[in-house]
Length: 271
Picture 1 (cartoon, rainbow, N blue to C red):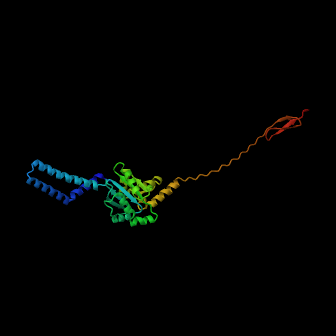
Picture 2: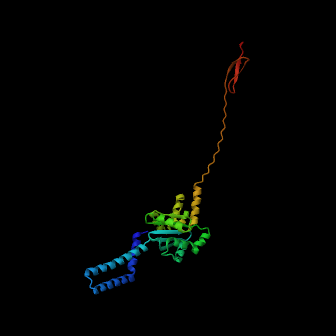
Picture 3: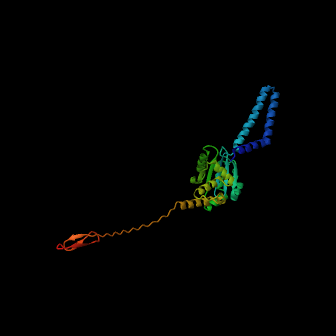
């Protein structure tokens, strides 16, 4: 996301509102004319004019803060859509990813809605409902340029929507967020792709571009299971044989026995 560009675009929209500028100028001129009739001093007339200009600037600044996105919420199942949120957690823009996502984004009327209301509206849409009935998995990913805002927004979504809390994630790395935009996929799908890539380094963004979250999750679980499965078999057989022989000399009956498997030769005492 480019904050400076978003800010400039929003500010340009303020300047582009010719009716607002025209009305403001007319009111300032009217006040100035009134002040001349009342014989106000030049200093007072100048102060009133400046006050009018300040009102205009403040009003414009409020519009800029409202129109500027600071957070995003990615809702992924098979349609993938991303909501851009302002500092008040109101939707100021919707982007669809993949054909189903673009079609869904065009059908939505969630602009200016509060974050959780917009998500619930999306979950109840015909496209998402049908995908869920086909064993689809919904995952929500939150990212923000504001410090600690991602986790706060995540908790808001967990408390205000029926999405399983285990499927609501935060994405903090701005480089990954920018990489998702450059790849043309939602931050949620890119996050799932990075998770898969950790256990399958050969996977590419193009491989997952048209996959549903369920398909990516199945690959993650399958590859994870394969990488953690080890089969080891070993057989050990040991046979020990020992042979020994010895010679012994004995006195007696002409026979002697040695230790082990030995035969002894004896001598008669008379010899």
